[in-house]
Image (cartoon, rainbow, N blue to C red; front, side):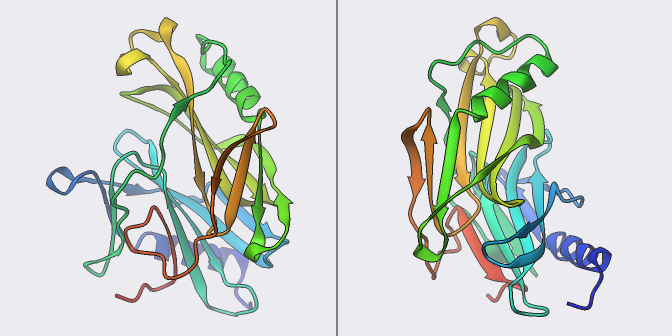
Length: 250
């Protein structure tokens, strides 16, 4: 690759912003905003990726609803892959030149209460400490190209922090190869029945989502908790995970 790191970043940002994105059902879709600054710049010693960016799209309350890795495919000079994962509890639609490039029809994440978790603290700094303690209860590995399991590294600084009408506090953590995200762990403090005024009765919830097509496994407190199989091509355009060479072919 002869381009500089800054030139590669500019290309990632340009292609990431080329989609027209909405969230919600067809009758009530709302626009989604591309966050042009990558939440991570990464490499991957396992797959050979030497430069990539992780980008997110946010709804009107600044909640991340989708993520994408944009990177040059290893052993090529200018073949770029866009790899998407829904982080939304609603359908999404990504259009490119007026046609659907990726349109997950279902929620990309499903939240469950975290067992044996203390009540969320009253302040943001204390809740962040709690979330870091909770995510450390998880461990994860993936099977690169169907091979042996590779243990993933937890990155304890969240890539996003947010709150909205149903969430008192939320953070998105990643497990990675090197710095390349392979798994999202989303932790939220949620009030009962989505009532943000009832902070004293809030509880911690978690959702996991892949950032790779390869098989993933996650454990909670050392016990199997969550897994997905290796998803090989062709991956439907309506799937909650999708990757393709940019630009997408309709």
